[in-house]
Image (cartoon, rainbow, N blue to C red; front, side, top):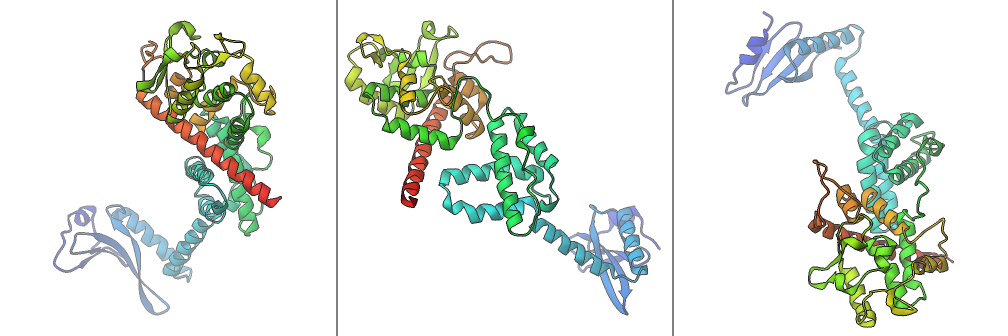
Length: 407
């Protein structure tokens, strides 16, 4: 007598496993622990065989009967349904082994040994956050250009144009590896650049590529300027405030015991007081500079006299001297540099970044936050930024050493 859904649901376990038969070889196997398995018993080539059809209640009685009927049709064609199941399982395993994610991980493991730890970590996070969730399970040989474009446009929609181009570049390297190892025939990322948003818009020229930022930091270290100008360059990168705010910094605004720079409202573009948390690196620069200019009003006094602050052209001229023209990097560009990398590379909270840039950020009721909003979180972010600049500087120096050795 065929089973009913009620009979299946109410079947209670016993000390030993037992079977409840349905029809045409289908039965429910009830285990002592209460688990219930669907089985289909059939004969092929004179031998009795059993095919697993799933577990109740994930597979209902109706679903089990459909699976049994499908197996019976296969059997009528002279094919063993159990053998078909094994082939399907093997095919799935092969497909998984040749997916974009599988080959991406293989490429990463074989390539990352020659990278710096920072570059390897950034590349791995890019793959896992921006590529694998969308095309990771796809067989790499079947992925076409529109699929990759859809992925990078998803990144662009977040406003992360640099990251979108970086994702396209990394995906292209994975496809090149797949081609070299015989698991793909084409690289669908070729030609996508023209369909993407430009890497960065033309406002104040700024360096936003982490590798180039590292080279900039090395260039600043090597700059043959006065200690005051060198410190202004270093703090422009570390603090990313407006150039006028940097050169107008006064010693009375530095709160040594709190590791803060407190800028009064009258000196701010938005007319509101601003707090800038100071990293360990920034504090060390200020402590050293205090020995030179600490008796005066300004942290960066003019070369023509301590009664006024440094000229607005000083940092710009220093950048030109280092080889960075107006189309490459400006004094104001340190803000765009930090804004882009803190968001797209380090993944910091956008509202913290905007607060730190002294942009007007409002709460859900439309009210501007006060100057100390999120100051603890911003202090952590500023330390993370300072440490990251040190890391990029170290990587750039390491690359220079490698290039000299090659030469």
